[in-house]
Image 1 (cartoon, one colour):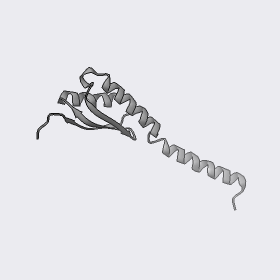
Image 2 (cartoon, rainbow, N blue to C red):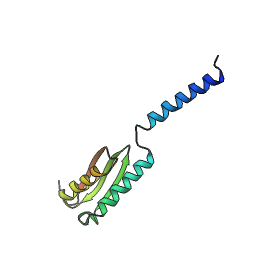
Image 3 (cartoon, rainbow, N blue to C red):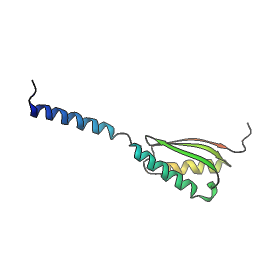
Image 4 (cartoon, rainbow, N blue to C red):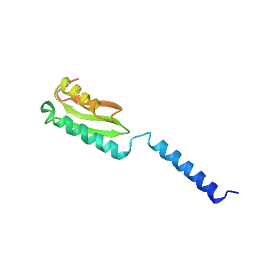
Length: 101
């Protein structure tokens, strides 16, 4: 049978272990902050103003979707995302506006 103090120690150990596991992945608020920083940095660049770029972040991975005019703009957006603190990876799904395949 557990005494109150043993039960308290056990519950504390479980809670500490759970909080340590949760800190391994960025919190949703951290993802929202990364998304806003990437979006702001992208649209601060004159070459990217007016392009249709969507930014989403999940667990530190930034997803770029939308349309840009050139490969240079596509690479610039990806570079900006990579340089943002907290970003672990960038998935660049940007497409060229006038890309006829």
